[in-house]
Image 1 (cartoon, rainbow, N blue to C red):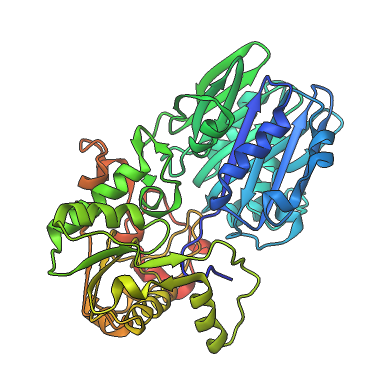
Image 2: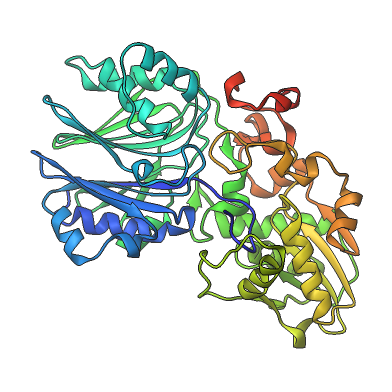
Length: 474
């Protein structure tokens, strides 16, 4: 089930804190700041050095936790947390993270942002060797690998497990004695390190640091394992074969505008995408408007570069949840109107440039173009601040089949006609890389471009791909 008004969903966010007497409550606030990354489930695990306590549930952070539940968790000095949007495994209670595994020796809790491309293969091998899985989440594979390899050196067991798994993973792990943060060799998902007084903090986005008053220290590096305990912070690497390839959609769509990803502010990057789009696709028009919320920054950049006034041509209803979405076409159409409204006084009689961050399935774009026309727009010119999404993502975005992607089977002109726009232009791949402003010396400027190009930064295993999709892999 997808948002009305948006067509992409990212899997989740992770948070961790070590060395603070209010660790669980700070984890709650950190998760709240990253609620945009997942609304289907939330959880927190904490420790006092003797026991791991945990609580999780389906729904938003505010739905899952109250003061009583947080007080029960706030018995220690360390915690990890997670909010999730289900891609692999489905939206069931057992899959809500952090996952907690208890044994006679000690306990382990894991929170994972991303998706493993060899999870199915590894799960089969582990089951043959006697492992019994309690969830359908690929995250459980990581715990089984660690525990199966468990020696007296826990860190070496973690490093060995991480060297086996493939795909996207930003991890926080908690034992009674350590907080561990780790990132895959491509750094496909963001993960940052911060400091709050003497406490160490890790989070998927830096906006979590701002909310709790922590100071950003640095980003976790691809292939890095950070261990935090009572002796301080220790950095290690489980591989030297790294090639930065952070998901481009973090800058385009997923992350909050006030977050910084590897030194680049998300709002500034999106404005630059809009400016680049204006250079590549100018048009005569009266107003520029952005589809709330993630496209507003790009729309402002487009307006500044062209000199066409930026206006709030669409308003988002903040109080519409997700449960109203119904399967009938008539109710879907009504759902879009409940989520977004065109401002007639702004667009009536005007030539409108509608800036959006992406077109995935095309149905939402068609409805929004129709909405602007119904409000009196004389022309609607659609500008997309990313290239066409032509290939599925296997790293934690819910576009795992090309059949969901309109650009995989239709030309730009076909899409323009289908959505009812007067013109349609996407940002070029080169324009995207240049606008975000990452290191041009790195391959693809250190970004994953697979959903635009089909060139994946990791091996994609046959059992990850539906049979009819295999010819798409480059």
